[in-house]
Amino acid sequence: MSTGHRINVLVIDRDEESTLALKEALSADGYRVNLLSEPERAVEQLKANFHQIVILDVSPDNPGGVKALEEIRSVDNDLCVIATTSMPSVEMAVATMKHQAFHYLQKPLDEEELRAVLAEAVHEKGLVVDLETRLNEVVGHRIRERRHASSLTLKQLANRTGLSVSLISQIELGKSAASMSTLHKLAAALGVKMTFFFETF
View 1 (cartoon, helix red, strand yellow):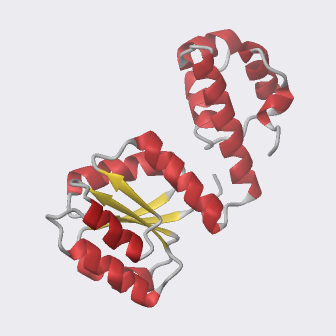
View 2 (view 1 turned 120 degrees about the vertical axis):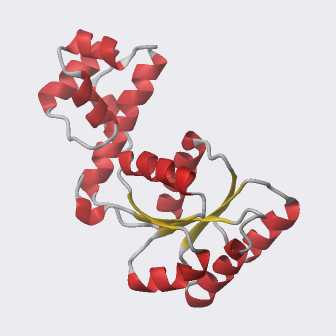
């Protein structure tokens, strides 16, 4: 992935264990992730560094969360903020939406749900991702989707194609660009035409 065009994400949460796990998962998906455990420093951090998405904990045991959202909105009314909470409530959902949170997610976060929300945010906000990176992500997603639909493990697909498990994994994650030869092998093994990977891109 071209590091100059990664989406920059700031995770603001006092729970160090969960934020480290979240950083690992998002980094694997190609995001550049920074962590902040002090919500009162949110605006300071946003002014000092360029971020396109904020994932902000607004759980009841983190009273600084909603205040941080208010402060973020006082300096930037367009920044994409995804609110998370360990104890969802109608009141909290209303409070976060009042301050234009893009989404409101329950903790512990479901990785697939978060991926979908982030993809929606990137699309709706028109966040810049270079074409090559986007192509790698789309192709990787379609390979993984087709592999799962065929009930194949990475190892089984590797055996069918003669490619390494690590290479296929890197391609599925959008971290590596597949050569035409590699795509031909994958298409044959997955029972699709090569054009399947690029349709409607």
